[in-house]
Length: 350
Image (cartoon, rainbow, N blue to C red; front, side, top):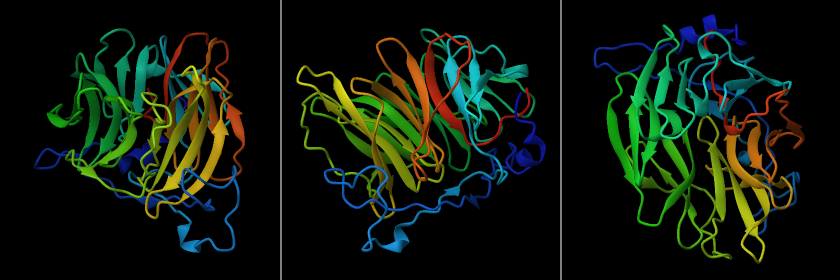
């Protein structure tokens, strides 16, 4: 495994059994950032990376807090799920396969469990959702016949899974399953992101979909997110992907425009402060016709997975600093890329 920094870091976030059998919630720490707000809502935001004007409220600067403890010198690495193995890409942009216990795990989706281990779905049709723990490197089956969406933490770490129109939360400590929400007929989840207990969902429907937010109990809540779309193209999703920052203070999402024949024409990335509703970053990503299928957001950077007619590619965008892009180098890997996510904590050595 390529993350030897683990020992001291994981002591603060190890899976701790208490009398009630729940996991003790770790304390948070501040991640310093400096963000300039971009004026305007989705319909009229400023140009790409534009600095705040003189009239901007300086209190709009965002300083996210990360829920679990981690070393301040840890730069989140990317977990890349493929049909052959799970890759890890560090700040340099080069990816390599996980080793040891994590080696050779074909995965449809892999997410760090916020405790030093991995929750992942086996690649292939009806792959099981498994938990590879950091304590003793054991593999536990969390669920069969469901789709892994994300992992959150509220009093205990939990996985969010979907089967048909039903979403459930599965607590990692004991695999207890709890109904979460039921999608209405005709609704489809395009993307879901969890931060703590806050769930953000990009949903498609017979109109043009929307973004919705739910608490850990499955109650829909209001936040300072984007307004409802006016559905310029019926039955084509306006919001395609969504990713919360680790503390839930900010939201990254994409807005899609379409050609007359209904195919994707272009995609814009927006990053928004959920406390005051202000968009502080907005720019086009990918080329015309590219399909952005997934986002992940570490509070400082956004990584996105785009699909073209010939291939899939992962790009990291320094969204709240320079806006520069970096393409992840997968080396000789030719297998299909299924998913990408930032590891919010370093993984245990395999």
